[in-house]
Length: 177
Image (cartoon, rainbow, N blue to C red; front, side, top):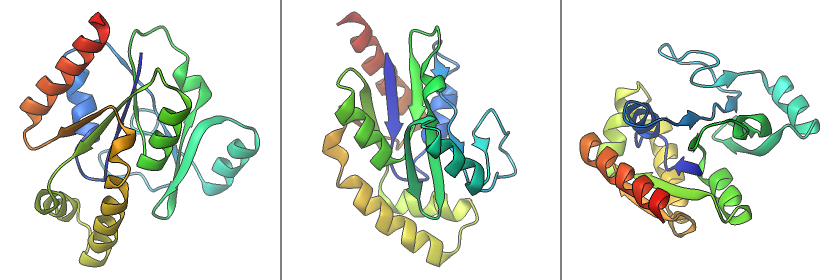
């Protein structure tokens, strides 16, 4: 089973996936990105951080199952990340890439994670982003929300414990059906 988590930047996708790892056995697909590594991130665990030149070379080699530009950076999922021995593989994808993969693979499951705008602004500020950056991200979030119907489930991440419980219920129901 391949589950794609998506939603605007700052809604808590990484936190949710990390918390799910404490509850169930799953494989987290690590994406490639051209963006700068944050202080708390580890190359090869959170992302594969590569240059734009390397990313473009991988595109030419047909290495990615999907890739998208998000803001000024690129993100991509390699084909090899989807090949593993786990019952559940989880992807954290940008909305356009997720929407594309979901339309091409009817057996993939899409979960759109969202939060209200005030909380999203607070989280982006907590990450140290300035008002201009936050304004652009909020415009992008509105555009991303327009694709919400491309997903099988929508989960509001107001409270992490409730969110995890809701997602575990979704996964359980998928496994028994």
